[in-house]
Length: 487
Image (cartoon, rainbow, N blue to C red; front, side, top):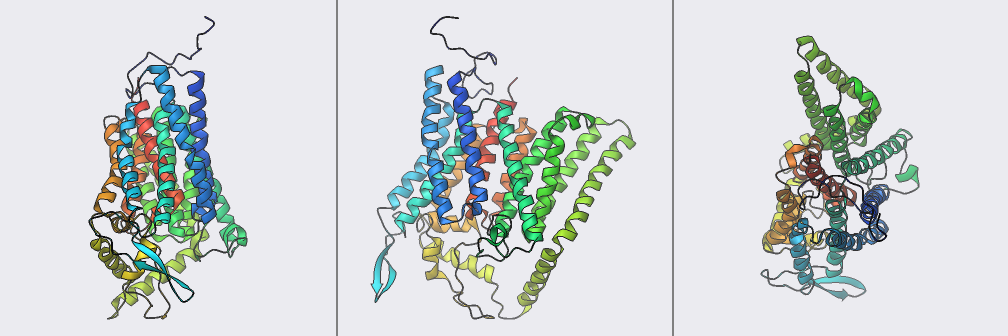
């Protein structure tokens, strides 16, 4: 070998960028791939164990770690230019992010509120900025939210640039599924011991329905839905390549056990909506299993046996889950009955409907650009018509709209929300031809789609860990589909 030559591992012939086949990797590129994987894995693990990323100190820590995505991005781009004499074409997917950042940064120059004092009490007074101008109700709050969002997006986007190995992407998913399993086991023991706060009572929870390290049970449920989708994708990846008997020699059995264990904790947490979503995911996976087994078997008995086995596993899961989750299920059943009874009374508040209506009024007043990123809890007090409950006469405060779609419209307006949507759609369009080639990618994207639909009636993206996992599944699915379509 020549003195100045760079040793490479031959992974196949050189192809144009984004063709689907990996380039031969230099030692430097392998280090960047490993650094990117570690960076994303640490980001997810930190967010999930640090109260779902919803504590102030946790958000600062996660933001600082996510900022490392910028030098990693630069290093990945420089490596591509140095090794192949071109910049990766996938960088075109960042135009919506750049436009979104520009919009939010411009809004900081037009504060929607100014501080004032009434005696010793700090007040925020409406500046009445023109609705034709982007503005921010609380510029520093918007800037922090933009910092976190951009850091998380770029951290997961780096997977498109750095990862050339399908095995590396599966390993990243295994780490995340195992992390979710660890949290599920931790949360189960915490629940069974009747802990009165997070971490077995060491940290009081602002929400009575918490689970594991997550403050809000529906956030835990949304996280589980994403991880169950990842686990099912891994299981069917191996099932597509092996017979049922051969699965014992693959990680498929571990993944299936992890999926079932994670699924068990969703009803245990008291999340009604996510319990339904989990059942739908598992039911869809059962149908998929039956179809695969049906195609492989030539006899009727051969088709019925796997179907019966899959159905038996699902029934066994329900049978095991109910005794463990019985207190939470009964409590939520009583809550549902009370809510239905109240809904029949004339003059019922119907709090959620009124909340959506008030949020729409907030969005309507600044429909073009919104009130500013992360402005909802600071502005909504003006529009909140449910200041006190009819039954308890207690003050009602809303930090979230319980609909991420409506809240986005109120905070970012039509233009900002459209740019946010394009942050998802631009990569999807870029990889549109390869998305259907990988069963793993389809499950990852399916999990993300379920959470997007769920965000119509809840606020899963109000949890930082759920947001990180959503972007992780999106970019892993796209990168893996392109790699999976390669010869």
